[in-house]
Length: 280
Image 1 (cartoon, rainbow, N blue to C red):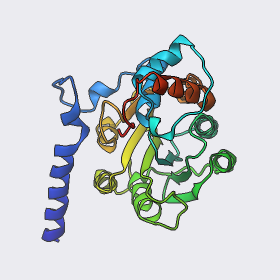
Image 2 (image 1 turned 90 degrees about the vertical axis):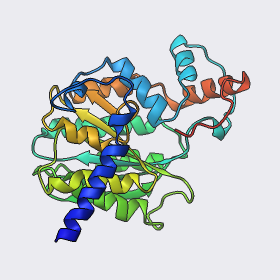
Image 3 (image 1 turned 180 degrees about the vertical axis):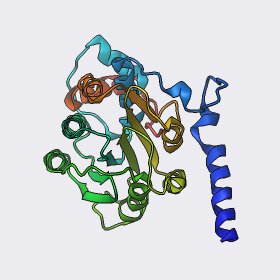
Image 4 (image 1 turned 45 degrees about the horizontal axis):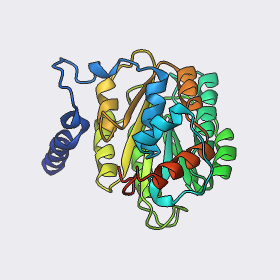
């Protein structure tokens, strides 16, 4: 027992040292480390962050997108981040069934606006976690997201993270593209309440594989924000806040369709703006 306790303590210290807190540009002293992340940015700011950090689109290209300049051409694949995505979706009782359905719709829209070659997998969690589908195509993902049922129940985030690592990240037979790294996108409305002492440790295990964790925290004010902050790979690039599910939909709608991003990316590449591949 003491050996297990020591192992967990060491892993927690390592998490604290490599978590997003030391990556913050602005240090703010607070009794609750998560309190300063309760503020909800404008939808446009969050949309641009998703494009830049989750999609891997260069920030200079995003500025051009906002100016609405358009040119048609093929795009070299090195101009944006290459990864396969795993959606981890909260299906606990604190979420209304209609809001859950709208969350799935937002993820469908987000998927439809991304790279057509990317592959996706999905996990939902309430009392327990379930892999809803292994890595599959963009088109198939949009269809399968529509079919995922709402379960209700407690919030067993740690089980979702554990299954994600074992069955999707480390499993070479789950349909992911060989040699392509994964990115996890968690959509949740609050703190875990099943074996919650394991939650941040499970997140650390995922990060140790080289996988980045992005978190969309949904709600005006979230209890347990410190845990949500700890889940994300960093607070600058990997943590997103929306007021409600309608706010999430507004953010996704502000992201241009993939064919438009392709045009801008190629135009920027031709003009020497993207000197090297996006790796963040």
